[in-house]
Length: 87
Image (tube, rainbow, N blue to C red; front, side, top):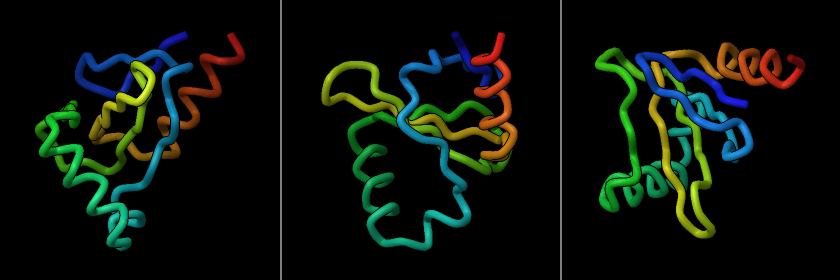
């Protein structure tokens, strides 16, 4: 199954490692460091020009992650994931 992250960004649900609230998680220095490293390695995909509310960590290959910044809230993305799972 697939989940729509907004603005034509679609990912496979089985690739999702986690959906995180950007405001709450970036308080941690570890999360900021993780996102900075991902940005330097060009592993961040911005799905919208709007202010992001969440980020989704995916595993596309063993040891390779992609991080999607989405304007949708984590609860909206979580509901979409559950809806698609139940279809």
